[in-house]
Image (cartoon, rainbow, N blue to C red; front, side, top):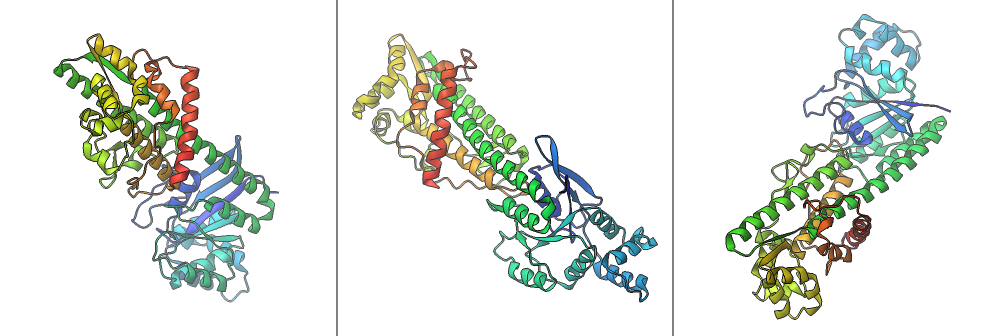
Amino acid sequence: MINTLILAVVGHTNVGKTSLLRTLLKDSYFGEVSHHPSTTKHVEGAKLLVEDKTLLEFYDTPGLEDALGLLDYCDLLAQGARLDGPERIERFLQSNEAKLRFEQEAKVLRQLLVSDAALYVIDAREPVLAKYKDELTILIDSGKPLLPILNFVANNEHRANEWRATLARLGLHAVVQFDSVAPPEDGERRLYETLALLLEPAKPQLLQLIEYHEQQAIERYRQGFFIIADMLIDVAAYHLLVATDEKTIEQAKKQLQTSIRKREQRAVKDLLTLYQFRKDDAFASELPLLNGRFADDLFNPETIKLFSISLGKGIATGAAAGVGVDLMFAGLTLGTAALLGAITGGAWQTVSHYKKQFIGRLSGKQFLGVDDAILQILAIRQCYLLNALVKRGHAANHAITLNVLQHKLWQTLPKPLQKARAHSEWSSLVKSFKAGDMGRYEQSEKLARNLQESLQHIN
């Protein structure tokens, strides 16, 4: 049995070796990824631990660049002697050229010889050229198990079938497709299971690693929904009691909108941290998310229109009838104006939710809060951001596109959000917030489960 499995990640320059490791390690900071060749200059290691025990060590190696020249040089060194593959490699590593012309290749081969196996990374978009066959010949000479990884197979122009045919002719029949930018859902499992077939002594820890990673993925996904639910409870419970003059109301609206935008920003940051992405991983001009912040104005009427939120019955019906315009388009409930809108729309069942607003109006004050439609938009785009992060490789540097139009999660607000409406102390956006409230925690848990179930129905 192998206590700690040591794997060398090898291949031609600029095929995505470091990108693959970033995704397997779930570490956006590992190594340097660039479109320029020969980015990795030295061997760089990283460990995968389970319960503080190192199960696997990866070693990222420089790109192979002159396999043809190295093969010719190894033939010259052999001088007709009948050397097997590892002997040819050892003779080369003892030569002066291993420190000069073939310094990069020597770094790769030295690491390979002290490793249990190697992952040979292939850019499957590339045609099968002679230089790649020469590389494979040299790597096979090491005598170490070699598992080819077909990278960038999410691209429609990949040549995976050509590569598989070539690899089979070289005696490499175990091949894994794993896109480091958009990894398949079962990609890690298939990679480690295939590796276990090549390395029987390492099978126990590879299976342990698979189980651990899958448990972690389930728990991380659950935590993601809790982050979203916690944000929604904050927003639903958030109300301001203000004087009824126009100037005060306008100032309060701005305060409310600013607070909610910041709260959503915090949720975005928490999701990125949860999945070990950098804040710049959600930063690009094409994104609806810019620098961790959504470009679409949450309170812009066009945003609500684009999301095609059906405001349904009740309060929204009154708003649609023209009584509470701010309710529908600014995302705010305006005291008795909204209440009258509800009554006009025939929504007596929802009047109880606005009791405080009504009482506030009688005392010369007015409550401002966030409308159901805004809560639904917040929930939708955060849930789709979560799903985008789940499917995103840690080597990705392209824009996340959240295809959330024409979707809605609920016909009516879930009960946890309805309850939050009556508990302003549940909102961390106000001074009266009571941290550690078990009632709030329980409703956040219920809402998190509701979000996960609702999203499954529309996926």
